[in-house]
Image (cartoon, rainbow, N blue to C red; front, side):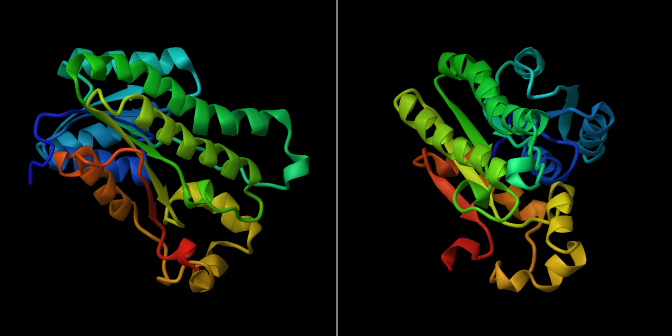
Length: 254
């Protein structure tokens, strides 16, 4: 317990799924958490639940596709907690479809949230981490940052960009005390996957046949991903930077 006691944490996409589970896990281990989401009510629900469990958390509404909004979130974290020690870039969108039919709105939104949003938040947080001489950045990509699936060309492109962004940041700041790692979940039971499931025959069909592509035979849970993120946030992962961690139920082992 208390593996990140007193560390100031910012989690994007904290209203649901992996972001919600991560914010709660970090707080349970002593982190001070700013719960950031485009949904103000969802962000507040996350923060309130943490406070009800005797954790420390506040909410902040921001669309990570907007640089000023992301900078505002980082500034708020520093105002509240005096630092930003842990940055978890989890916010994302999955807008599946037939590749050649995707219009500019889908292309732009996918890249703006999934890739540019992580660029913006890293740029905003790193100066504070440099001043402190330490920091842990955990970028959430996807198994589709490493392998592709039908109807996810744009999503895969954005998530592949996150993998290389994370490796580049890790190298740029390796000697400054700042670590940057990337987590690549497989199919996790969260609402972000529902639209993709509809194109594959429906969620019930996907889960009935999931062992055909995820050998463990079930979807992952947000809490399982949060456990890995907690480890990367903690000093237990002090020798890890630039790592690409697949947590995918064996999907890419095939």
